[in-house]
Image (tube, rainbow, N blue to C red; front, side, top):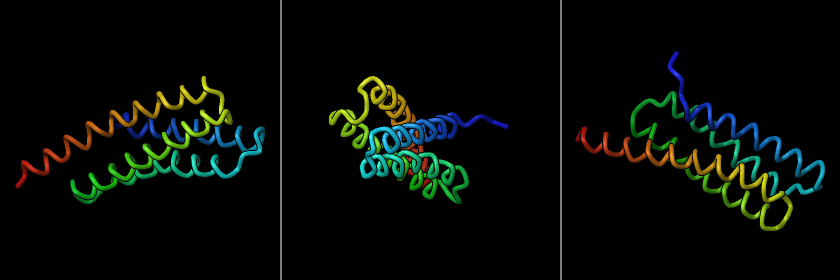
Length: 121
């Protein structure tokens, strides 16, 4: 079976987000921002999984675009948690680096898919 790098990396990122959520809620007793991060950070991979079963290129593009937006939102929550000192900077920076890698991959996929759709017309 062919490896899907984006699926694997987004799944791995979701696991890291779950760990961060547990840390924030159990140790820091922070529930609101951590829940937002959990929702957005795990949604990235869920939408990538849906994109893998898309019914058309446009459907695929739509689902990857949703993942991209969830990744941007996750970046916001991570930066906010880092800058408010609720999440250690070193840990947040590791997560932000992984997130930036996901965003780069999705950006390339979105550009390529848009070009393919345009060339089909």
